[in-house]
Amino acid sequence: MLGFPSSSSDIPHRSSLGRMVNQSTVLLMASIGSLILVLALLILFHENANATKGYRLRSLERERSLLLLEQEVLNMHIAESQAMETLQNDNLIQVMVSIRNPKYTEGESEVALRRK
Image 1 (spheres, rainbow, N blue to C red):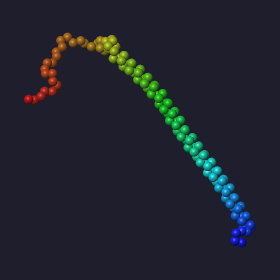
Image 2 (image 1 turned 45 degrees about the horizontal axis):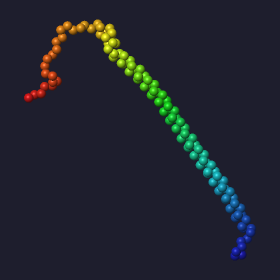
Image 3 (image 1 turned 90 degrees about the horizontal axis):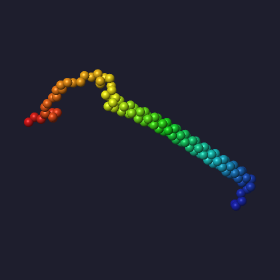
């Protein structure tokens, strides 16, 4: 009686231990599977965010290049309108009356006079 327990009380304990091992194995597999699924979803969302940023960056670069091209065209138009030939051939400038006897002001060259 001291060293050997009865076999009838030992069998339910072993079956419940086996059932607990099976349940813990299933629980471990389910938790590992759910962890893998959560990590896969996080990776998917992260890659989707990166792809969206890349698409936005590409569209902004395309818009920037179009704006730079438009700026070059506008700079060419400005240079053309400021050219000397254009100004000399302009009808408004040709209609202006030329001065005959200009009178220039004479005085000190300083803008503001100092008091002494």
